[in-house]
Length: 184
Image (tube, rainbow, N blue to C red; front, side, top):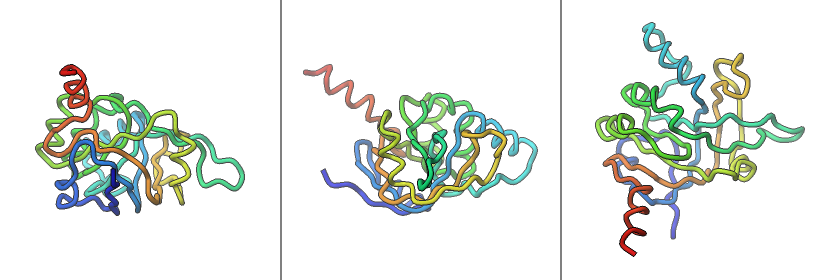
């Protein structure tokens, strides 16, 4: 299976070509955030203030990386369970977010927002945080430093390996896989 290579920003034109099940190698800038950071991002929007980064055509990786050892850019950086961001994700998708990376299922409200506004949900391999970290070439905290590992980081990645789990049409790899095995 050949991997699709894409470079951020993730535009509507590019994301509409991605289909559930596609293997993708992402290069460029992505952002990190887990539930505590997402809560603050939505509270910022509720106050009518600017977010700490432009979410239009951006990709967020749900991760709380381990501290870097000497000589490393970042520590182990495996995906967080995505359902923890389900309360906040639709609001960010409305603002132009076009990609999310995590692991596990997403709720119906998130999938509806993805189809309505155009967004893709990628899954990263859980338990492979050290391997994922090898694709991260730069990392810096850009907001909410007080959250520690949950601070928002800007990452520069190269060939960051993910799989399209839910595409912009709502096709869901988890559901497709389950249906395939039920027929067997």
